[in-house]
View (cartoon, rainbow, N blue to C red):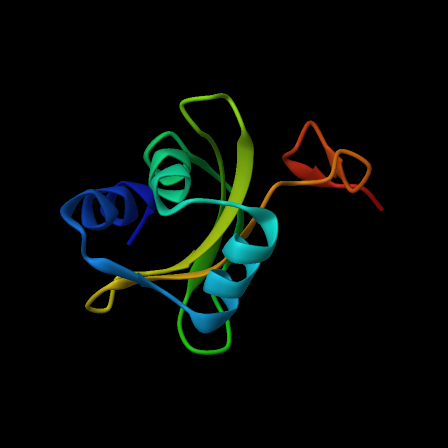
Length: 101
């Protein structure tokens, strides 16, 4: 499965947030709507095919207001799980897409 399937399932409402993602969202003042917007406009910047529970990917997307977010999502089996989300730190990311070494 790929990004298009993840975007489609999120648009359908077929997703949920992990406890970790909910805590990160609260701590960082990221709304559910912002996560939805970032996924809808997102691009995959990292793939984790061997992730702990099932394959996942890190998505870079922008909200309607232009806020950049990184959202890690597990593939839909049967639903998408948002594992974590955060606003990337430019000191840790080159062009918000590549991890600085």
